[in-house]
Image (tube, rainbow, N blue to C red; front, side, top):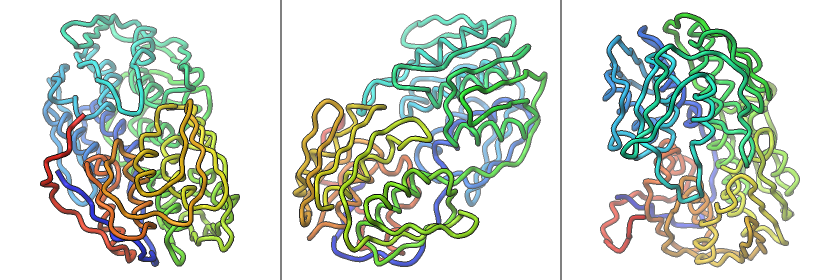
Length: 431
């Protein structure tokens, strides 16, 4: 297990390239199972979540080749319809295998996903959707056994959950419906750019999907899909993380390979808080500079195009050193504030109650040993460590490796003083 040692007080400068989206890559990789022809996917980030997905595809019988960010996948006839617990336990997003396996083989066996440190994320909407297409679901020995001997049949399905639309649920239903008989209409569909990217990939394969990016998606089933080439969209959460880093600890930072429309909400919030944000003409690059008189702010997380839950932890780190009182309310995952107790170890003034964090800005943070609890919490701790006085040790670095490609190397190139080392202290207890 690795830890990151960060020496604070060094200003970032220069430019950084954003990697392909982790959250877009995972369902796109799973969708490669929908055809027996080869698909080639570029800008797949080299992070542990995508590596786990590729391992699962390989274990199911697909041929997987990876080179310099490009993945080639070929899924011949006879691939397995059953994934073991050992294969999928490391990644909750493995649930997105359900759609393509049911579309192609009309059956699958997948382990029920386990718990999650940032709150319960049930699969009931995924199962409700696949049952609406005619599948039968039973649970046996901790596995979901799903079958549709006569194939899937298109229908209308509402995907709204208690906390809004489900992104992976929308992805799963799209992938299941592309080879179903007739037409499927997804109501209350997730609008996230990652859903649109998956729809674009499927359409390149020969699917007939309309309305991705809106609340209603229509899928006209086809008999067969074919291979294609596709480039994954930029990771908007990585872009947002570097934008916050620029506002906290830089002399001005240029962030390349972004999509302006995808990060507009994050950019607008930084401007409201007094920082400089300037896009180039085509919106593929953004320059961020700390404001001379930064201001506190408010966040209310919401499904896209609202402010993303995946960025509230990073902004909490910024608010911790911003004058005034800031408020962060997470409507998606109200329990997602475990980073706050670690930030308080570094001197932050934060109170958390009922899914809301109230942050009173302090003049400075101080380095301390801290522990990452999830992917975005770990990013917040890195940002705080860059701004803190002294040295911070961030344990459980594997969390950040799930979704940030070479973060430590990118920070080094920008002027940060960070070092990844083996964590040999032995006092860290796994959850």
